[in-house]
Image (tube, rainbow, N blue to C red; front, side, top):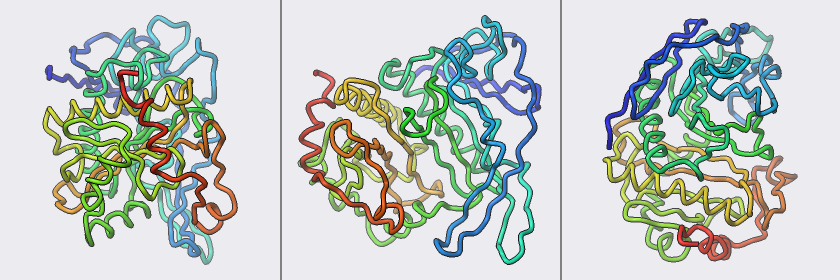
Length: 352
């Protein structure tokens, strides 16, 4: 692995724009985007579901589907308008979301008979490449290795913040999944609490490592791709027809414990999953992807994994979270995971 450089550029709003790459970035900036009003999100407790809901009304003003020539995530130096990255080129860029659901500027509001809190924490945007169409499927493998190092850096830095209890890197891909910008990018949410799904996973892993319990079956019956250190498989309890998990064959609490070989194999697995989805649909497949790591750096119970949810019921038919899923939290499936695994396996092999 080549040396990784990290540049901390201070924007005009005094926030950090981080530039990661295998080359040292020292270019002078061009014109920067005008500073917008900083949102002040807050949280309200939902007593029925026993969970926090975050409100950030300024988010409705965020940029939505601009023409390609006005993409705010492209390098801005050679364009006729300022962008989030005021340079002519970059490898991976990370910066605070201008319309966050969590930030240090959050304020508590008082509502009679309702529990509220300031929505402290942080929301970051991770731009995968300067090229407008260079998704995980198209970019060089070493760029995905760099992306993994970037995720590790953000885990380590964000977890130092007193108000942060959990860090979730994720990607929404496609209009079907709520994307408002087509330029390949992901996000990182640093929550002031451990989210409900992660709390349940923590409890499950404390009782037993259910992943290791079924690892042989995953590798034999449910896999769609595998290499020396990772398996990509449809879990036998999948809630989506083409849900795929990327799972290390050994227990790790998070990618911060990966060695260079694990990072290389992880990057290879990640790319093959996205390529496989695209080959399967014959177009860029919509999905939600998230890294599920432990909230604790030293955790010998939690088993890190990545979850992909394409919102598809069968083939290219959409999966709508309707009555049972939305109202009761009970997913209804009309395709067996083992059948989906067989269907996808051909497309997730890079030889095809």
